[in-house]
Image (cartoon, rainbow, N blue to C red; front, side, top):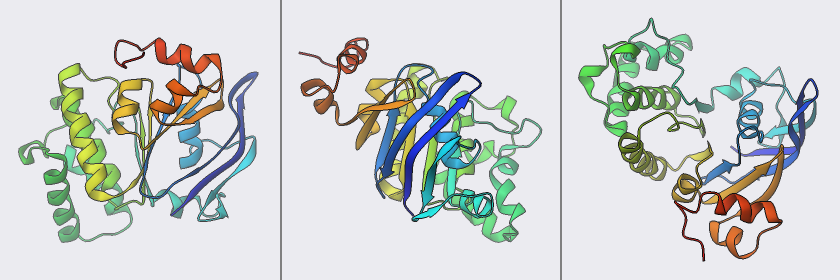
Length: 246
């Protein structure tokens, strides 16, 4: 499945969130959206998954426009993870993970087999499956959210600041585990972060946004050696404690 975003514009009242953004997301790669707070990266992710409708422009899935008619079927081909996990507090971990699978009518054995596979993949403790979100650690909640996103074997995995609320040690462990998961599953991943070090760690390509627009794309080396404008260098230097800058 391919995703192409073409000339997308989205505003909320007088505030421009995404401004004439275009990009084709390459299959099997991890693309990282980065930029300062309020630059539009999370809105762009919500536009791609169909939770927000663009004012103008087009999102194409397999070269066909994303519309209200095909939105439901397209969403099943995408896994979506938000910063706090977005788990339903009244459902145990196992029920959160299996919610969509039950909705579309998968059998109990197929669901159980898939959950067992995902607990191994995400290194989630099996004795935690019957716990409620309030009884899980921050890292465990994110692993449950990831399992839920992967339950229907999506072609695309969209993650919006999935590690932003975690303490450094838990974040470090999850970063390494996520990178292994991305590699083993060969999914196309779009990841939003404000952390440049995290973008470098995960990204096959980094897209830097400013005020809703795509300012530069490439690797960290491209950004350092060939910045498209002074903002690129300023953004990198603002995080120089995590990135070695000459």
